[in-house]
Image (cartoon, rainbow over all chains, first blue to last red; front, side):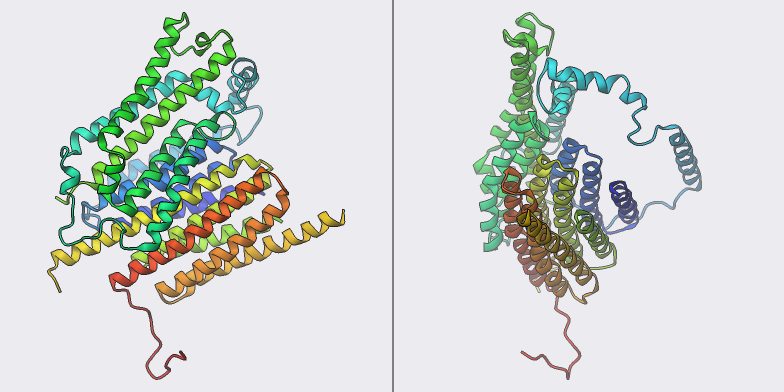
Length: 327
Length: 92
Length: 110
């Protein structure tokens, strides 16, 4: 029965995607992409992948929509009519699709216990995590400890993205002061009393909830990425209802840059501390006399680093887009 | 009983999607997206109880908060857009 | 025993009722002629449907942490859905979307 729900949602997903591709109005496309993100998060949830669903919700439905709208504000509303579709391209894509569909016939069935992934790697992680790391959430243990190098790489990719955006798009320190629509003395949604009040009421809860998700990541779905997205969502909410300038007064750009750098440095620092204390890079057992306690400490610090970097970069990108004048 | 509620919510999601896809003004689509978000929150709460895993309610809470932000962002964008168009088209 | 039976019946009723209200809201949003009436349909049944569904689940959860989380979800949804509807209607009106009126001669019974 639950599989039926999943299949139903996937069908809706296909319909939404067709809608996104076919529409000429970019704004409608962004709305549909938000709906797409919600659908896929629901599918993840039904497949019992809670961490992924939370990340998809926080990043896809919330932040990505806001950033895309910020980009759309600088452009035209309609998609430029492209060249006429090439027949060769259509044939190549169709052939590729058929090949991929044919390849899926060899896949093991969904949830098949005899699938290769359930024979070697997964049982090892599930068996060893209580002994080595002892956190209830195996996903966080894998993400932060067993596969710490991968997360390390991800943090630096996000960090690089933030730096790239700052290099290419930032207009310098005066960007915020110049970003006024000349005749509008309404900054953000300021003159709407009700959204402003509710926004201001909700913002501390969002930040608090983000912190809860950050530290609760060992026990339930959560962790650094989701927490960073939620905290930056809270500050974006403040920027939306109070105006760009007020938000930059609250958390200036240099604080955001500091957060970004601090998160990445924290990650590297933990790794180097492990090396200095006698273990390998990112081998948290070396951090404390008791190996398991060392793992807990290492995971805590590393997740905090991830959360700092993600929130710093997302807010940087938001402010860079929002502060840009059109053309 | 959870199945019945989940089924009703899923069907409503289809209706909201139809509203978003049919040719309509900007505000219809925003309304559809907002409705879809609220239905997703309810679906998550119902399915979490269906699975018996109540610690997954954190997701529903996150969605409820995120949904609000998207709507406000859209409205701010549309408002700025309308203002800008009114400017570039000349003061009427 | 009888207490839990009453709770179950109540939950059933609330969940089915909530599901029906949510569905009615969806149909209304699709079939109404105008942005404002669609918003009316969607957001009114959104709030009441939400209350019914979440209350039904809370009754099943009993007194536990999950019930507190569900109550928090309900409070946030009740705070944000009407606000979003208000902001949407305001934006639509400011942008000049005019409500559909009946043909002249039928009048309105205000």
